[in-house]
Length: 300
Image 1 (cartoon, one colour):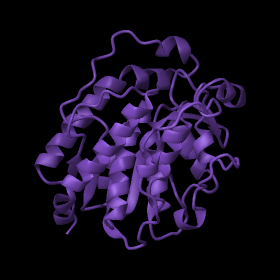
Image 2: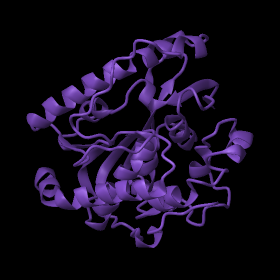
Image 3: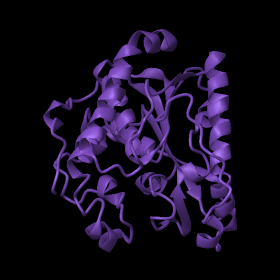
């Protein structure tokens, strides 16, 4: 490990209350932009805002994992301590997982990280947790929910956070999976279909951000054996923009509460600058504090 965030000691720690508030938390992905979500979730936990259900995609799934385990600051400490560890991102990750980014470094207990996942707290049945991955054969999103997918939950989380083009597919029960964002970047519709009256969507981009339409894509060439997946990737930007538009409409109409960065996020998907990542964490943390009364009023 060659670097560590200079203010790592300021990241809060402790265990969240076991008291739950009825509602579903929907967490967008975005690789290292997920530091924003991690800051937001830590502030929620510190203020006893522990929702009864969490669903996340990619980095959102990883952040949600630690939210459900109630481990305040764990997500941020791992990312801000190990970002430049080659076992996580780099040569050793490539050797171990055939990818420059080894998501298993975060989801598997290899005796490296000094703060293991509190599995007893995470697996308690009172709080629901789900991660979205993409079935590479059908191109459709698949929800891996705690208690409903056998022993494949952590594999589903790993698949959810496995980025296309640079990472190998994750085989689960003989089926290849990739990043949930390939087919469903923000799974708010799942929360609606589950019947939740209170839904909070935490985004990792400012509300006005939209992606440019993809006219040229390597998807058909790289995933020629998986045409349904390739089509989903080609259409991903326009689908994402439609989701963002619908979320804004639902937010305006009071069907859900959308919370997003208070300023444009300039952090890259695999951002190497730890100080920028740390600043993004605190942006999420402070944004949450500024919205506390709004969140409580909405949930009540």
